Image (tube, rainbow, N blue to C red; front, side):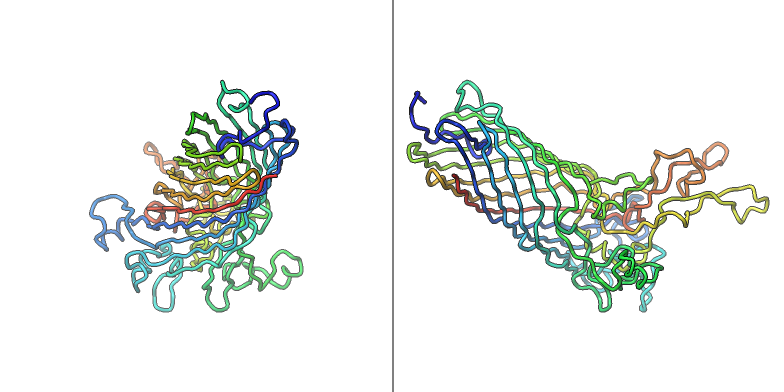
Length: 496
């Protein structure tokens, strides 16, 4: 612009636009955003078959493990209100606040090619070999189909972030526009707790992990005493919760270059999460745990913004944005598609606790009294299953498109949608032993293997207290296949 020329529409595309302040006649900038987002997720849950079961059902004829037993179809719908405030601080420096409000979140597991049929559920959802037997002589199922979670709602998290524009093509035409920023997310509501909306009469809908009977009575303790101490509110159900129970840190950066009517761009986002004390993550942070943290998430994007029409003097513009993204989610303990179903299970193989550590003892079968064995230490912490499982790493691909109409100097509207496809991945992937501690025979428990030379037991680590053979052992693991996510949104932005 020439010296003294009035400021007209001179911002880059939406992805790299940072509001600012003290910029010529524009001393202060404030943007208020409100939008509605609808999300739908679907996935096919399958379970590995062990060899004997596979042969009986004629699902596998070779000496290998097959991952081909249908279990359930998972569906999740979320209606979300997205609110945001951006405040310009100086040239291309902005502070912002976000607060997604979930209006409703519903999850359910239903029939997948006949899995709700009598007799089939007992096979695909069978517990461990030592599972308790029901009155009909059948092992207790891990859960029943159809399965419904309670409707959840509330504040998802509060985010505080800042964006910085290190380069701006509209200030220096020889350079592209480059921004970077960070965001801190605070989980301020109740964290997610495993729940069963169709719990049997007399059972808690959202039981505490130590309530092994799911009836409001703590494991092996007097509920009245505990209620007086405030440790366990006997006879009460936990709130279903909504937040992930973590504090998150997001880092992001994007770069773009306007060329006449198009503006290509590229960038990335990454999120680190740190469990809060009030969440169920803390119950799994033990010495033998192999994975005791939420997953690391990362995204890379490449896109093209098309500006087919703009009237700069009237601050009017139409922008179309097409984007491709690829994501990676590392292995970590997470809320999987089976979080509610497994976490609220009545199966003894899941609800009976494990001990946090093992200790040495004299083998009672040895007449010499010289041989020692490793047994569970009854004085160690009891580890209860909460529904949070070790989810294997996977990738995802996303296509999205949106349109933005800036109607004038002070208002604009955006509408858009996206489709995401996730790679097939195991959602109960924990390991039985932690090999980082292989020098203590007394604490090794079952983590030992005979040596080929002299038959002396070889220590392979210490037991992982989070390991549940019923769902984590090879041949019994669950996986999520054919996972798709659809998102659609609309929002309005008022600019002061």
